[in-house]
Image (cartoon, rainbow, N blue to C red; front, side, top):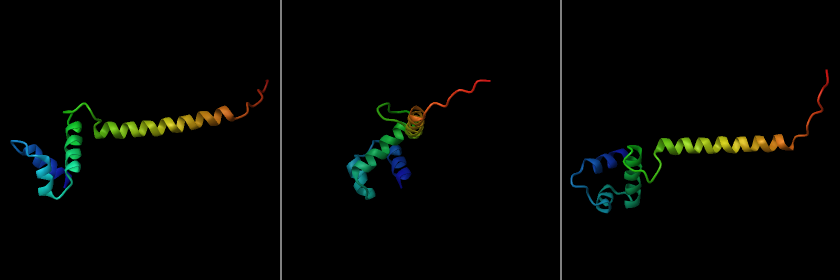
Length: 86
């Protein structure tokens, strides 16, 4: 439904009023507005919000960063092993 709603908005000329189009589709106007914004970001038409790919990459990097921080804390807390002399 999201894809069809955004496609209908993009195909319309002139652009419809989002509130009216949302009412016609039976969705909340803010939901439709967010779908349109997300589509515009994914197409590179907006620079005020991240694209879907960028959001996914950012989430993955944040997760990796958290894991690395936990690993560092574990290594800092581990006692140093005595060195072996040969």
